[in-house]
Image (cartoon, rainbow, N blue to C red):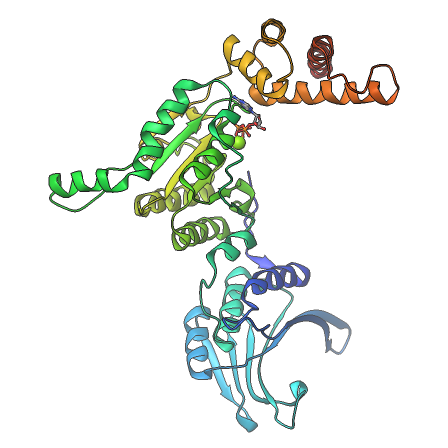
Length: 436
Ligand SMILES: Nc1ncnc2c1ncn2[C@@H]1O[C@H](COP(=O)(O)OP(=O)(O)OP(=O)(O)O)[C@@H](O)[C@H]1O
Ligand SMILES: [Mg+2]
Protein backbone atom coordinates (compact mmCIF):
# COMPACT_ATOMS: atom_id res chain seq x y z
CA UNK A 1 0.00 0.00 0.00
CA UNK A 2 1.43 3.39 -0.85
CA UNK A 3 1.08 6.66 0.96
CA UNK A 4 3.52 9.01 -0.75
CA UNK A 5 1.96 11.46 -3.08
CA UNK A 6 4.69 12.47 -5.46
CA UNK A 7 4.38 15.60 -7.48
CA UNK A 8 7.81 17.07 -7.68
CA UNK A 9 10.94 15.20 -8.74
CA UNK A 10 14.57 15.97 -8.05
CA UNK A 11 17.13 15.60 -10.81
CA UNK A 12 17.77 11.91 -10.21
CA UNK A 13 14.08 11.05 -9.89
CA UNK A 14 13.22 13.05 -12.99
CA UNK A 15 16.03 11.40 -14.97
CA UNK A 16 14.90 7.90 -13.97
CA UNK A 17 11.30 8.56 -14.83
CA UNK A 18 11.94 10.30 -18.13
CA UNK A 19 14.34 7.66 -19.43
CA UNK A 20 12.09 4.82 -18.31
CA UNK A 21 8.97 6.35 -19.87
CA UNK A 22 10.69 7.30 -23.14
CA UNK A 23 12.18 3.86 -23.68
CA UNK A 24 9.05 2.15 -25.11
CA UNK A 25 8.63 4.96 -27.64
CA UNK A 26 12.17 4.85 -28.95
CA UNK A 27 11.42 2.44 -31.77
CA UNK A 28 9.71 3.90 -34.83
CA UNK A 29 6.95 2.06 -36.67
CA UNK A 30 9.63 1.15 -39.25
CA UNK A 31 11.68 -0.41 -36.46
CA UNK A 32 14.35 2.32 -36.35
CA UNK A 33 15.82 3.62 -33.14
CA UNK A 34 14.67 7.18 -32.43
CA UNK A 35 16.86 9.92 -30.88
CA UNK A 36 18.22 9.59 -27.40
CA UNK A 37 17.09 11.86 -24.60
CA UNK A 38 19.83 13.56 -22.61
CA UNK A 39 19.04 14.42 -19.01
CA UNK A 40 21.77 16.42 -17.28
CA UNK A 41 22.14 18.83 -14.41
CA UNK A 42 24.26 21.92 -13.86
CA UNK A 43 24.84 24.49 -11.20
CA UNK A 44 23.47 27.94 -11.67
CA UNK A 45 25.44 30.52 -9.86
CA UNK A 46 23.81 33.65 -8.48
CA UNK A 47 26.30 36.27 -7.49
CA UNK A 48 24.83 38.53 -4.89
CA UNK A 49 26.73 41.18 -2.99
CA UNK A 50 27.32 39.07 0.06
CA UNK A 51 27.13 35.44 -0.84
CA UNK A 52 26.89 32.97 -3.65
CA UNK A 53 23.94 30.61 -3.90
CA UNK A 54 23.83 27.60 -6.11
CA UNK A 55 20.78 26.12 -7.67
CA UNK A 56 20.64 22.93 -9.67
CA UNK A 57 19.16 23.27 -13.10
CA UNK A 58 17.72 20.16 -14.73
CA UNK A 59 18.25 20.00 -18.50
CA UNK A 60 16.48 17.70 -20.89
CA UNK A 61 17.41 17.69 -24.53
CA UNK A 62 16.53 15.62 -27.56
CA UNK A 63 16.53 15.84 -31.33
CA UNK A 64 13.20 16.14 -33.08
CA UNK A 65 13.22 14.25 -36.38
CA UNK A 66 9.85 15.35 -37.50
CA UNK A 67 8.57 18.28 -35.49
CA UNK A 68 5.53 20.41 -35.99
CA UNK A 69 6.56 23.26 -33.72
CA UNK A 70 3.25 25.04 -34.05
CA UNK A 71 1.29 22.08 -32.70
CA UNK A 72 3.89 21.39 -30.05
CA UNK A 73 3.64 24.96 -28.81
CA UNK A 74 -0.10 24.70 -28.75
CA UNK A 75 0.10 21.47 -26.78
CA UNK A 76 2.66 22.87 -24.33
CA UNK A 77 0.61 25.96 -23.59
CA UNK A 78 -2.47 23.80 -23.03
CA UNK A 79 -0.62 21.45 -20.75
CA UNK A 80 1.42 23.94 -18.74
CA UNK A 81 -1.10 26.66 -18.06
CA UNK A 82 0.03 30.29 -18.33
CA UNK A 83 3.01 30.58 -20.64
CA UNK A 84 5.11 33.28 -22.13
CA UNK A 85 6.44 32.80 -25.67
CA UNK A 86 9.42 34.60 -27.18
CA UNK A 87 10.99 34.37 -30.62
CA UNK A 88 14.74 34.37 -31.06
CA UNK A 89 16.94 34.82 -34.08
CA UNK A 90 17.58 31.81 -36.32
CA UNK A 91 14.03 30.64 -35.88
CA UNK A 92 14.02 29.32 -32.36
CA UNK A 93 11.11 29.81 -30.02
CA UNK A 94 11.23 29.94 -26.26
CA UNK A 95 8.28 29.08 -24.10
CA UNK A 96 8.33 29.72 -20.40
CA UNK A 97 5.65 28.49 -18.02
CA UNK A 98 4.60 30.17 -14.80
CA UNK A 99 6.23 27.39 -12.84
CA UNK A 100 9.59 28.24 -14.40
CA UNK A 101 9.81 25.47 -16.99
CA UNK A 102 11.61 26.72 -20.07
CA UNK A 103 11.27 25.01 -23.44
CA UNK A 104 13.41 25.97 -26.42
CA UNK A 105 12.18 24.81 -29.81
CA UNK A 106 15.31 25.08 -31.91
CA UNK A 107 15.15 25.03 -35.70
CA UNK A 108 18.94 25.05 -36.14
CA UNK A 109 20.73 23.25 -33.38
CA UNK A 110 24.36 23.07 -34.39
CA UNK A 111 25.22 20.98 -31.37
CA UNK A 112 23.43 18.13 -33.12
CA UNK A 113 25.13 18.70 -36.45
CA UNK A 114 26.36 15.13 -36.87
CA UNK A 115 25.91 13.87 -40.37
CA UNK A 116 26.25 16.44 -43.16
CA UNK A 117 26.32 20.20 -42.84
CA UNK A 118 22.72 20.60 -41.78
CA UNK A 119 21.84 21.55 -38.28
CA UNK A 120 19.16 19.55 -36.54
CA UNK A 121 15.92 20.53 -34.96
CA UNK A 122 15.87 20.00 -31.23
CA UNK A 123 13.91 20.55 -28.06
CA UNK A 124 15.66 21.72 -24.92
CA UNK A 125 13.84 21.88 -21.64
CA UNK A 126 15.18 23.23 -18.39
CA UNK A 127 14.00 24.03 -14.92
CA UNK A 128 15.44 24.89 -11.53
CA UNK A 129 15.63 22.29 -8.78
CA UNK A 130 12.70 20.02 -9.51
CA UNK A 131 10.18 18.97 -12.13
CA UNK A 132 6.54 18.07 -11.56
CA UNK A 133 4.94 14.81 -12.71
CA UNK A 134 2.67 16.73 -15.08
CA UNK A 135 5.68 18.47 -16.61
CA UNK A 136 7.37 15.09 -17.12
CA UNK A 137 4.23 13.92 -18.85
CA UNK A 138 4.37 16.96 -21.13
CA UNK A 139 8.03 16.28 -21.93
CA UNK A 140 7.27 12.69 -22.93
CA UNK A 141 4.42 13.91 -25.10
CA UNK A 142 6.66 16.50 -26.80
CA UNK A 143 9.18 13.77 -27.56
CA UNK A 144 6.46 11.68 -29.16
CA UNK A 145 5.13 14.65 -31.15
CA UNK A 146 8.62 15.69 -32.22
CA UNK A 147 9.47 12.23 -33.49
CA UNK A 148 6.06 11.21 -34.89
CA UNK A 149 5.71 8.31 -32.50
CA UNK A 150 2.51 6.40 -33.12
CA UNK A 151 0.49 5.48 -30.05
CA UNK A 152 0.06 1.80 -29.12
CA UNK A 153 1.98 0.11 -31.85
CA UNK A 154 2.45 -3.18 -30.13
CA UNK A 155 0.19 -3.75 -27.13
CA UNK A 156 2.00 -6.88 -26.07
CA UNK A 157 5.32 -5.03 -25.95
CA UNK A 158 3.76 -2.19 -24.00
CA UNK A 159 2.19 -4.59 -21.53
CA UNK A 160 5.56 -6.16 -20.94
CA UNK A 161 7.16 -2.75 -20.45
CA UNK A 162 4.56 -2.22 -17.73
CA UNK A 163 5.68 -5.35 -15.90
CA UNK A 164 2.68 -7.37 -17.09
CA UNK A 165 3.44 -10.95 -18.08
CA UNK A 166 1.97 -12.32 -21.27
CA UNK A 167 1.95 -16.13 -21.32
CA UNK A 168 1.40 -17.80 -24.63
CA UNK A 169 -1.21 -20.58 -24.42
CA UNK A 170 0.54 -23.64 -23.04
CA UNK A 171 -0.97 -27.06 -23.56
CA UNK A 172 1.36 -28.46 -20.90
CA UNK A 173 -1.00 -27.02 -18.32
CA UNK A 174 -4.05 -29.16 -18.80
CA UNK A 175 -6.88 -29.82 -16.35
CA UNK A 176 -5.26 -32.93 -14.86
CA UNK A 177 -2.35 -30.77 -13.71
CA UNK A 178 -4.77 -29.49 -11.07
CA UNK A 179 -5.65 -32.45 -8.87
CA UNK A 180 -9.08 -32.72 -7.21
CA UNK A 181 -11.50 -29.76 -7.25
CA UNK A 182 -13.87 -31.48 -9.67
CA UNK A 183 -16.73 -29.11 -8.76
CA UNK A 184 -14.59 -26.06 -9.50
CA UNK A 185 -13.43 -27.54 -12.80
CA UNK A 186 -17.06 -28.24 -13.76
CA UNK A 187 -18.08 -24.71 -12.87
CA UNK A 188 -15.19 -23.28 -14.90
CA UNK A 189 -16.11 -25.45 -17.86
CA UNK A 190 -19.77 -24.39 -17.77
CA UNK A 191 -19.38 -20.70 -16.96
CA UNK A 192 -16.14 -19.82 -18.75
CA UNK A 193 -14.92 -22.37 -21.27
CA UNK A 194 -18.19 -23.29 -23.00
CA UNK A 195 -19.33 -19.70 -23.55
CA UNK A 196 -15.90 -18.74 -24.87
CA UNK A 197 -15.65 -21.73 -27.18
CA UNK A 198 -19.23 -21.50 -28.43
CA UNK A 199 -19.76 -17.77 -28.44
CA UNK A 200 -22.10 -17.93 -31.44
CA UNK A 201 -24.68 -20.09 -29.65
CA UNK A 202 -24.83 -17.59 -26.80
CA UNK A 203 -24.87 -14.53 -29.04
CA UNK A 204 -27.61 -15.94 -31.30
CA UNK A 205 -29.91 -16.23 -28.29
CA UNK A 206 -29.44 -12.62 -27.20
CA UNK A 207 -29.90 -11.45 -30.78
CA UNK A 208 -33.38 -12.95 -30.57
CA UNK A 209 -34.20 -11.93 -27.02
CA UNK A 210 -32.73 -8.47 -26.45
CA UNK A 211 -33.95 -5.15 -27.76
CA UNK A 212 -30.41 -3.85 -27.75
CA UNK A 213 -27.67 -6.13 -29.07
CA UNK A 214 -25.54 -7.20 -26.15
CA UNK A 215 -23.84 -10.28 -24.82
CA UNK A 216 -24.91 -12.58 -22.03
CA UNK A 217 -21.55 -14.29 -21.89
CA UNK A 218 -19.61 -13.79 -18.66
CA UNK A 219 -16.97 -11.10 -18.91
CA UNK A 220 -15.65 -11.10 -15.37
CA UNK A 221 -15.23 -13.98 -12.94
CA UNK A 222 -13.76 -13.83 -9.44
CA UNK A 223 -11.46 -16.53 -8.07
CA UNK A 224 -11.33 -16.33 -4.31
CA UNK A 225 -9.77 -18.46 -1.62
CA UNK A 226 -6.70 -18.97 0.56
CA UNK A 227 -3.16 -18.75 -0.88
CA UNK A 228 -1.80 -21.64 -2.91
CA UNK A 229 -5.10 -23.25 -3.84
CA UNK A 230 -4.75 -23.14 -7.61
CA UNK A 231 -6.30 -19.82 -8.68
CA UNK A 232 -3.41 -18.64 -10.85
CA UNK A 233 -2.85 -22.17 -12.12
CA UNK A 234 -6.49 -22.42 -13.19
CA UNK A 235 -6.21 -19.16 -15.12
CA UNK A 236 -3.22 -20.57 -17.01
CA UNK A 237 -5.11 -23.77 -17.78
CA UNK A 238 -8.14 -21.83 -19.02
CA UNK A 239 -5.91 -19.80 -21.35
CA UNK A 240 -4.41 -23.02 -22.73
CA UNK A 241 -7.84 -24.61 -23.09
CA UNK A 242 -9.32 -21.79 -25.15
CA UNK A 243 -5.98 -21.17 -26.89
CA UNK A 244 -5.65 -17.53 -25.89
CA UNK A 245 -2.72 -15.80 -24.20
CA UNK A 246 -2.91 -15.17 -20.47
CA UNK A 247 -2.21 -11.58 -19.54
CA UNK A 248 -1.10 -11.76 -15.93
CA UNK A 249 -1.32 -8.39 -14.23
CA UNK A 250 0.55 -8.35 -10.92
CA UNK A 251 -0.22 -5.65 -8.40
CA UNK A 252 3.23 -4.07 -8.78
CA UNK A 253 2.57 -3.30 -12.42
CA UNK A 254 -0.24 -0.98 -11.37
CA UNK A 255 0.46 0.47 -7.96
CA UNK A 256 3.19 3.05 -7.77
CA UNK A 257 3.74 5.82 -5.30
CA UNK A 258 3.66 8.50 -7.98
CA UNK A 259 0.66 10.74 -7.82
CA UNK A 260 -1.97 9.78 -10.36
CA UNK A 261 0.22 7.17 -11.97
CA UNK A 262 -1.51 4.06 -10.61
CA UNK A 263 -4.82 4.82 -12.24
CA UNK A 264 -3.04 5.73 -15.46
CA UNK A 265 -1.18 2.41 -15.34
CA UNK A 266 -4.40 0.53 -14.80
CA UNK A 267 -6.17 2.35 -17.62
CA UNK A 268 -3.26 1.80 -20.00
CA UNK A 269 -3.06 -1.91 -19.16
CA UNK A 270 -6.78 -2.33 -19.87
CA UNK A 271 -6.39 -0.45 -23.17
CA UNK A 272 -3.49 -2.64 -24.23
CA UNK A 273 -5.36 -5.81 -23.30
CA UNK A 274 -8.27 -4.60 -25.35
CA UNK A 275 -5.94 -3.87 -28.26
CA UNK A 276 -4.54 -7.40 -28.01
CA UNK A 277 -8.02 -8.93 -28.16
CA UNK A 278 -8.70 -12.60 -27.39
CA UNK A 279 -7.02 -12.80 -24.03
CA UNK A 280 -7.60 -14.06 -20.54
CA UNK A 281 -6.81 -11.03 -18.40
CA UNK A 282 -5.86 -12.00 -14.88
CA UNK A 283 -5.84 -9.31 -12.19
CA UNK A 284 -4.10 -10.65 -9.12
CA UNK A 285 -4.65 -9.38 -5.54
CA UNK A 286 -7.63 -7.43 -6.72
CA UNK A 287 -8.58 -6.48 -3.14
CA UNK A 288 -5.60 -4.10 -3.11
CA UNK A 289 -7.08 -2.28 -6.12
CA UNK A 290 -10.65 -2.39 -4.95
CA UNK A 291 -10.72 -2.26 -1.19
CA UNK A 292 -14.04 -1.35 0.35
CA UNK A 293 -14.75 2.34 -0.03
CA UNK A 294 -16.06 2.80 3.46
CA UNK A 295 -13.62 3.37 6.24
CA UNK A 296 -10.29 5.03 5.80
CA UNK A 297 -9.52 4.22 2.22
CA UNK A 298 -6.72 6.33 0.94
CA UNK A 299 -7.78 8.83 -1.69
CA UNK A 300 -5.40 7.33 -4.25
CA UNK A 301 -6.92 3.88 -3.77
CA UNK A 302 -10.36 5.35 -4.33
CA UNK A 303 -9.27 6.83 -7.63
CA UNK A 304 -7.81 3.49 -8.73
CA UNK A 305 -11.02 1.74 -7.75
CA UNK A 306 -13.13 4.16 -9.75
CA UNK A 307 -10.98 3.61 -12.85
CA UNK A 308 -11.26 -0.15 -12.31
CA UNK A 309 -15.06 0.01 -12.09
CA UNK A 310 -15.29 2.04 -15.27
CA UNK A 311 -12.87 -0.21 -17.13
CA UNK A 312 -14.76 -3.36 -16.17
CA UNK A 313 -17.99 -1.74 -17.37
CA UNK A 314 -16.36 -0.91 -20.69
CA UNK A 315 -14.69 -4.31 -20.96
CA UNK A 316 -15.75 -5.68 -24.29
CA UNK A 317 -16.73 -9.27 -24.61
CA UNK A 318 -15.19 -10.29 -27.85
CA UNK A 319 -14.66 -13.86 -28.86
CA UNK A 320 -12.18 -15.05 -26.30
CA UNK A 321 -11.73 -12.22 -23.87
CA UNK A 322 -12.48 -12.65 -20.21
CA UNK A 323 -11.36 -10.92 -17.03
CA UNK A 324 -10.47 -13.04 -14.02
CA UNK A 325 -9.89 -11.33 -10.69
CA UNK A 326 -8.18 -13.19 -7.87
CA UNK A 327 -8.26 -12.48 -4.16
CA UNK A 328 -7.47 -14.04 -0.80
CA UNK A 329 -9.72 -11.53 0.94
CA UNK A 330 -13.10 -11.33 -0.70
CA UNK A 331 -14.58 -9.65 2.39
CA UNK A 332 -12.38 -6.63 1.79
CA UNK A 333 -13.72 -6.10 -1.72
CA UNK A 334 -15.80 -3.07 -2.45
CA UNK A 335 -19.46 -3.93 -3.03
CA UNK A 336 -19.63 -2.11 -6.36
CA UNK A 337 -16.61 -4.06 -7.58
CA UNK A 338 -17.97 -7.36 -6.31
CA UNK A 339 -21.26 -6.81 -8.12
CA UNK A 340 -19.43 -6.51 -11.44
CA UNK A 341 -18.33 -10.13 -11.39
CA UNK A 342 -20.73 -12.49 -13.13
CA UNK A 343 -19.64 -15.38 -10.97
CA UNK A 344 -17.43 -16.03 -7.97
CA UNK A 345 -15.64 -19.37 -7.50
CA UNK A 346 -14.27 -20.42 -4.14
CA UNK A 347 -10.94 -22.31 -4.10
CA UNK A 348 -10.93 -24.08 -0.76
CA UNK A 349 -8.15 -25.75 1.20
CA UNK A 350 -8.23 -29.31 -0.23
CA UNK A 351 -10.08 -32.06 1.65
CA UNK A 352 -8.66 -35.55 2.41
CA UNK A 353 -9.40 -36.99 -1.02
CA UNK A 354 -8.09 -33.92 -2.78
CA UNK A 355 -4.87 -33.93 -0.78
CA UNK A 356 -4.41 -37.54 -1.77
CA UNK A 357 -4.90 -36.63 -5.42
CA UNK A 358 -2.45 -33.73 -5.16
CA UNK A 359 0.18 -36.02 -3.57
CA UNK A 360 -0.59 -38.36 -6.46
CA UNK A 361 0.46 -35.62 -8.90
CA UNK A 362 3.76 -34.87 -7.20
CA UNK A 363 4.65 -38.39 -5.99
CA UNK A 364 3.13 -40.55 -8.69
CA UNK A 365 5.34 -43.55 -7.85
CA UNK A 366 3.63 -44.07 -4.47
CA UNK A 367 0.81 -46.62 -4.05
CA UNK A 368 -2.74 -45.73 -2.97
CA UNK A 369 -2.37 -46.71 0.72
CA UNK A 370 0.82 -44.65 0.97
CA UNK A 371 -0.85 -41.61 -0.57
CA UNK A 372 -3.68 -42.04 1.93
CA UNK A 373 -1.21 -41.94 4.80
CA UNK A 374 0.30 -38.71 3.45
CA UNK A 375 -3.18 -37.22 2.99
CA UNK A 376 -4.12 -38.09 6.56
CA UNK A 377 -1.03 -36.32 7.87
CA UNK A 378 -1.39 -33.10 5.87
CA UNK A 379 -4.58 -31.62 7.20
CA UNK A 380 -5.04 -27.91 6.36
CA UNK A 381 -2.22 -27.79 3.82
CA UNK A 382 -2.85 -26.08 0.49
CA UNK A 383 -1.84 -27.49 -2.89
CA UNK A 384 1.19 -25.19 -2.85
CA UNK A 385 2.22 -26.50 0.61
CA UNK A 386 1.92 -30.08 -0.60
CA UNK A 387 3.98 -29.36 -3.68
CA UNK A 388 6.64 -27.74 -1.44
CA UNK A 389 6.68 -30.79 0.86
CA UNK A 390 7.16 -33.11 -2.12
CA UNK A 391 9.99 -30.95 -3.45
CA UNK A 392 11.61 -31.02 -0.04
CA UNK A 393 11.41 -34.82 0.08
CA UNK A 394 12.98 -35.04 -3.38
CA UNK A 395 15.88 -32.81 -2.35
CA UNK A 396 16.51 -34.79 0.83
CA UNK A 397 16.47 -37.96 -1.24
CA UNK A 398 18.97 -36.50 -3.69
CA UNK A 399 21.36 -35.73 -0.82
CA UNK A 400 21.03 -39.32 0.35
CA UNK A 401 21.88 -40.60 -3.13
CA UNK A 402 24.90 -38.29 -3.26
CA UNK A 403 26.03 -39.49 0.17
CA UNK A 404 25.46 -43.04 -1.12
CA UNK A 405 23.03 -43.80 1.69
CA UNK A 406 20.45 -45.08 -0.79
CA UNK A 407 20.61 -46.61 -4.21
CA UNK A 408 20.39 -44.08 -7.06
CA UNK A 409 17.82 -46.19 -8.88
CA UNK A 410 15.34 -45.83 -6.00
CA UNK A 411 12.77 -43.04 -5.73
CA UNK A 412 11.93 -41.30 -2.42
CA UNK A 413 9.89 -43.57 -0.13
CA UNK A 414 6.88 -42.69 2.02
CA UNK A 415 9.05 -42.12 5.10
CA UNK A 416 10.92 -39.39 3.25
CA UNK A 417 7.63 -37.58 2.54
CA UNK A 418 6.46 -38.04 6.13
CA UNK A 419 9.82 -36.67 7.26
CA UNK A 420 9.35 -33.60 5.04
CA UNK A 421 5.80 -33.12 6.39
CA UNK A 422 7.04 -33.31 10.00
CA UNK A 423 9.91 -30.91 9.48
CA UNK A 424 7.48 -28.48 7.86
CA UNK A 425 5.16 -28.76 10.86
CA UNK A 426 8.01 -28.19 13.31
CA UNK A 427 9.24 -25.17 11.35
CA UNK A 428 5.78 -23.67 11.60
CA UNK A 429 5.63 -24.42 15.35
CA UNK A 430 9.02 -22.81 15.74
CA UNK A 431 8.08 -19.66 13.86
CA UNK A 432 4.88 -19.41 15.94
CA UNK A 433 6.97 -19.56 19.12
CA UNK A 434 9.36 -16.92 17.83
CA UNK A 435 6.46 -14.65 16.98
CA UNK A 436 4.68 -15.02 20.33
N1 LIG B 1 -5.03 -28.91 -6.69
C1 LIG B 1 -3.75 -28.80 -7.05
N2 LIG B 1 -3.15 -29.76 -7.78
C2 LIG B 1 -1.86 -29.64 -8.15
N3 LIG B 1 -1.09 -28.60 -7.86
C3 LIG B 1 -1.64 -27.61 -7.13
C4 LIG B 1 -2.99 -27.65 -6.70
N4 LIG B 1 -3.25 -26.52 -6.01
C5 LIG B 1 -2.12 -25.81 -6.04
N5 LIG B 1 -1.15 -26.46 -6.71
C6 LIG B 1 0.23 -25.99 -6.96
O1 LIG B 1 0.52 -25.00 -6.02
C7 LIG B 1 1.19 -23.89 -6.62
C8 LIG B 1 0.46 -22.62 -6.28
O2 LIG B 1 -0.78 -22.56 -6.97
P1 LIG B 1 -1.38 -21.19 -7.49
O3 LIG B 1 -0.27 -20.25 -7.79
O4 LIG B 1 -2.31 -21.51 -8.58
O5 LIG B 1 -2.15 -20.71 -6.21
P2 LIG B 1 -3.02 -19.37 -6.00
O6 LIG B 1 -4.37 -19.82 -5.55
O7 LIG B 1 -2.95 -18.53 -7.20
O8 LIG B 1 -2.29 -18.74 -4.77
P3 LIG B 1 -2.17 -17.19 -4.33
O9 LIG B 1 -3.49 -16.81 -3.73
O10 LIG B 1 -1.09 -17.20 -3.29
O11 LIG B 1 -1.82 -16.41 -5.54
C9 LIG B 1 1.25 -24.16 -8.09
O12 LIG B 1 2.56 -24.53 -8.42
C10 LIG B 1 0.31 -25.29 -8.32
O13 LIG B 1 0.83 -26.13 -9.28
MG1 LIG C 1 -2.06 -16.64 -7.49
